Length: 276
Picture (cartoon, rainbow, N blue to C red):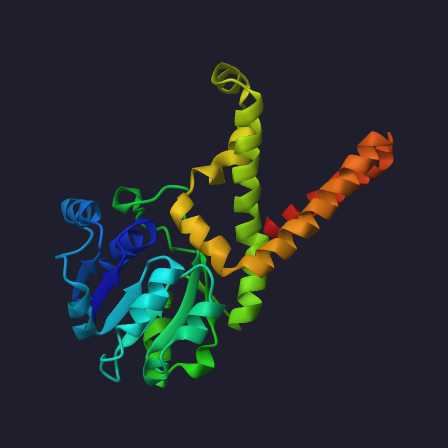
C-alpha cells in the first residue's frame, strides 16, 4: 500500500512512525498546510516527501489527521479518488463528519477515532507506538465499501489496536463524557488556580494530584475549540451532569454530612475497578 497522511501533528506523525514498520506499506507521504510542520516532518523522517493536497488522491489510503472542520472541507475535495481508494479520518467527533461525506465517496470512507494521544502537539510530539494496545472506534462501518472495510481492519490490526464498533451519534455522546468533558474541566482547573495563586506558590505547592488534573490543559486550544464546537450539545450535557455531581458533593461538605462525602468518594473509587 502507498499511504498519504494529511496533517503531520501528533496523531499523523505518530501514525507515520508506526506505519513505517509494517511490511505491507511501501511508501508514506505527507501533506500539511503548515510549512513549519512540513519542514519538521521531513527532518524527523516521518514521511518520505511532502506533497500538495491534490496529489494525495493518487494514493491507496488517505488518512485525514486534521481537525474536524478540516476533515469536512477535505472530503469535499476528494470526490475524484478511485473506487478502491480508502479514506480514513481520525477526527475526535464523528456525527458531523459522517453526515458531510459526499455521496459519491461514501463507500471510500471510514470514520475512525483512535482513543489515544498526549497533551503535546506538532510533528515533534510524534510518538512511536502511540497507537499500540489502544482502542480505535469505527463508526457506521456498514456504510463503507467491502474493500475499505478490509483495508482499515488490516491496518488497525497491524497497528495492534483494539477495534470497537458503534454509530457516530453514540460515539459522540460517549466521547463527551470520557474525553471532551475532562478536557473542559482541566482547562477550568488551570484557570481557577492561575487566577488565585501567584506562580511562585504554584511551583512550590503543585504536587502530583494537581499536575495530573491539569495535564490536559496543555492541549492545543485550536484543536479543542474545534472539538467543543462540533460536539457542543453532548459536551454541554456532560458538563451539566458533572456540575450536578459537584454540587451534591459541595452540599454534603457544607452540611457536614461526612458519611455522604465518604460514600461519594467510595462510589468514585469504583471507576478504577473497571479501568484497572
